[in-house]
Image (cartoon, rainbow, N blue to C red; front, side):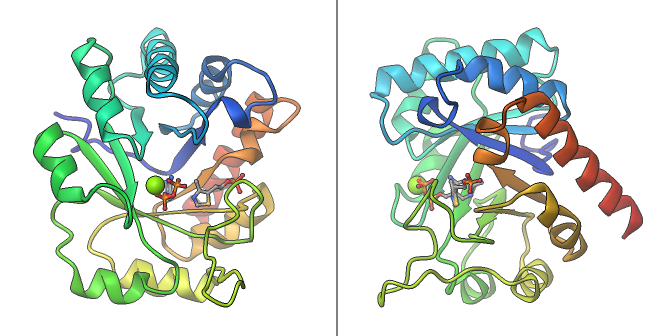
Length: 235
Ligand SMILES: Cc1ncc(COP(=O)(O)OP(=O)(O)O)c(N)n1
Ligand SMILES: Cc1ncsc1CCOP(=O)(O)O
Ligand SMILES: [Mg+2]
């Protein structure tokens, strides 16, 4: 069974070297997956392609060392070329996450093949219309946000008038109802948000700073996972 068939986006860590307060990315990944995180995305707006590939190699290695290579998906943000190059070097990387102004999902699927995981995000205000009209067959999940304005990605939800459009819990429930693919919600998500997000019916949460900027990433990751699982069991 491929990772695509087995994909679990319930607890999704997004990170790059600029997010970890000087701690190695691989250490934070190891702590998060030991705590139960199910998906990892290497995302850096500062790394060179080679640094991104190296970071991905280290993340892939700690996932392998944890024996989690068949249950924790590893993706790279934006850089289809880096996924391709990493795979050529024998690094196990499962797919790519792109936004609507990034390289098209058609190209991602064509280059990476039918078993790859392809995630897509769309503008907050257009997402409901998008899921009702677009061909979603190439996409494995949708990344939706922000739940709150976040300094980690200041353009997330940015409208033409300069305001930030956040997603309400009602928006998330409507998206969950309308979407043919699973939905993962992020942007400013903290542990206190998790029960309400889980109750909307969406399939997971993604975080950068709630884990990467925590004094103890393992403890923070564990609290997020346990809170999510408890909320899903209760709903
Ligand atoms: C899981 C997940 N969801 C959304 C995003 C945002 O992607 P994008 O809109 O392409 O923005 P950047 O991350 O590239 O700044 C994501 N990366 N992951
Ligand atoms: C990558 C991304 N996409 C939408 S918001 C975001 C960053 C979320 O970071 P944080 O969890 O620190 O708010
Ligand atoms: Mg992008």
